[in-house]
Length: 96
Image (cartoon, rainbow, N blue to C red; front, side, top):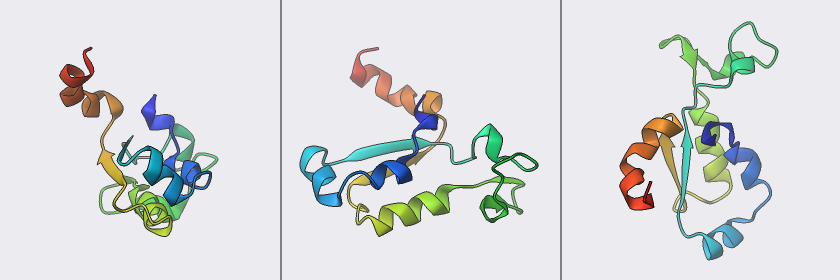
């Protein structure tokens, strides 16, 4: 599942130059609502990622900062949605 892909961690393994040379655009799909173990009361809950206004986790600011820090603002295109929803317009293009 694409939700399980941790792009900020993946960015640590590639230089911005390497990504840009091989993959000019990377679509990063994530709901940014945190995983089950990151929810309030769970083992990996981080109060800094909890959005009090909306009453839910929001990891998108961390992701955005990782992209900026890696110099990939013109390479990584965030899609904030569950993978099943994000895949709908791509299905005809991908042939499935």
